[in-house]
Image (cartoon, rainbow, N blue to C red; front, top):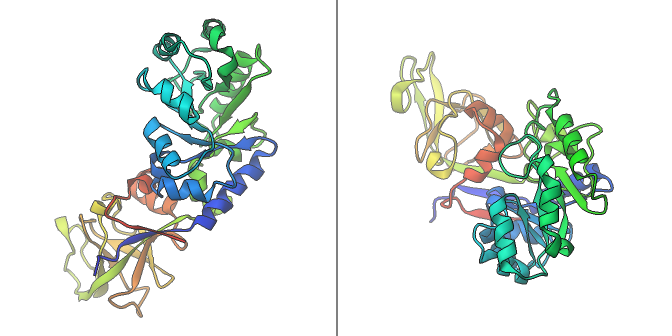
Length: 357
């Protein structure tokens, strides 16, 4: 029998979350961001589940776009990092991939390609300072693209601090973007990541780009996905494979950094950082068994972790332990591990089977 550690993927919850994103976007259309293997949920199954919902998909790179085509999906696919070599442009043209061009090298590749028929976006750097053209350079860039003007769909930017509702940087970036693209009102605009959908009064223009919210994790600092009306899509679960009672003064696991202050019934769960569970989640990180919340004890190992069964006296070997999902949000676990839900979901390793419903 295979090791029964698995990730259950609820595709109806995924659709619920996309519909929530679309409802919060109003007249703006939402493209589904499915990069990083659908944030660890499986790009093909995620893409197919949203086929009747999303007018476009967005990915990071051309390999991910190919995976959507291999899954039989024909919608336009936006490449958020653009192309990585000149030869990719012909494939984009043939396959209906839509690169976001963000630097002079990509413009040179397009000019050297010498063919029309490619649709593309331009990225504007409004303060994130990763990719994109500075606002003052935009008129020159558009002029340089005159031979390919019919393919220019519009402009995108990306927010640096949209997850922080107390920050004013998003408002500054929005004003910068609006001013920069004002000379071309006929072209589309896209600024809205997941967090932007929850910012009061935030313009989202023609296309938004919900990502993490589709998978039920929170895009906002200090809030969990369920608090925002999102449903968890992934439930990571593993079996309880042993239980024992440790005496006061005994320790558990590597480093012996948790020591029982009283007699404690504990159990071992067949999941660890080799499966993508965060090693830095330690004592008091929540989990659940049979619907009851319990806590981790000591260090996470590669293949196992320990839990305190005091709050679940009926638990037995063979019962399923939820590491995150319906009872414990991935955002809670991420906070205990000093990271974010994005990292946990995308970090679940290939040895954990995905089971879809």
